[in-house]
Amino acid sequence: MPLPTMTHSSPFLLPSPPPPPADPADAASYAVVVLNQRLPRFAPLVWTRAQLRVCADGGANRVFDGMPDLLPGEDPDEIRERYKPDAIKGDMDSIRPEVKEYYSNLGAKIIDESHDQDTTDLHKCISFITRNPPDPDNSNLCILVLGALGGRFDHEMGNINVLYHFSSIRIILLSDDSSIFLLPKTHSHEIRVDPSIEGPHCGLIPMGAPSSSTTTTGLRWNLDNTSMSYGGLVSTSNIVEEEKVTVTSDSDLIWTISLRKHA
Amino acid sequence: MPELLPGEDPDEIRERYKPDAIKGDMDSIRPEVKEYYSNLGAKIIDESHDQDTTDLHKCISFITTNPPDPDNSNLCILVLGALGGRFDHEMGNINVLYHFSSIRIVLLSDDSSIFLLPKAHSHEIRVDPSIEGPHCGLIPMGAPSSSTTTTGLRWNLDNTSMSYGGLVSTSNIVDEEKVTVTSDSDLIWTISLRKHA
Image (tube, rainbow over all chains, first blue to last red; front, side, top):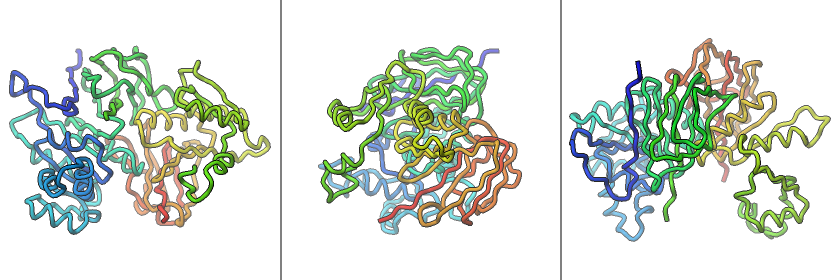
């Protein structure tokens, strides 16, 4: 039995929003989560594309300080009012009191989760979004996460584990340099690459377990029933050669692609 | 180096901090930088023909064939710039730790230090709280672990299994100056580095 196909694309990084699809049911709805790291340069763009915006604790400081920095020449107070989160969730031990008060006064939900020490801030935010989706009728929810990569290494690894825990939900971790998401083994994957915004550097990472067999098309060095593992082959510094890449594997893989830097 | 040592003469700093060797594809190094260090005696080793291994892998190979002290069996290789940046590079660099599992290699960033704990050994990690910690983690990278046991952590593992999709020990805390780890699987140990004024 062939696996069902899952398609992936990144229209949320395009400078102008793509036209809506013919069938409204195909439209994606986006939520954005901001963790406590410096915002990537495309943060205002991604924020604008999203219908629901959640900050994890100190991520609210980053939005408060960082959005005006990324939009110089505009009035900082107007920017802060425009780029206000719908919810701020987490331990509340990093958010500055004045930032918390500012967004609370603007109507942001403040959800204190300091009692829960068992899950990461990202996990809490993903849970929140799944229970409060921006468009409950829309099955095409995609959660974009800023600030999950780089920084403290254990945080980065914990954030990637959240992708495995919520493997049935589209979650994309974004940094200035890279985009990463999970390719669950339950599906065959079709990844549409837009060379104006992403690539050509890519990789397939058998993060949690070895893969006995992975097959790809569309890459410079395709895999053909090839095994991958830490200690063996991990496909890094690969190159996307076609606008459609396919991946089928017996194991969950992390796909990563570089993001193009624009002036 | 001059930027990290302000107040000193940049030219003196560059002469003092000169590499012994520069190895790799040579597609990123600026021509004037290559010439400057070549003139100071650095070995320039062009490996652009080898597309199969990462730059870090090539450098580790070079060091193992040209160790600083051949009589010393306590070689430890410290790597700057392996973490952060492009995610596939970071993952490829971590894979180098697995490929050279019998060599001590420590990847360092401003925030973190990471190294491999091979399953063939029980591990004793001495933590100096003036420079590192308290945040730490144990990462079953590449394969699940059925059983890991630790001492010295706020949330110790006791014959506990770990895996992606299950438990990965992150945001743990070092509670003692000696941490011990025994596991049936190779693990990546990570500890935060303290920031000083």
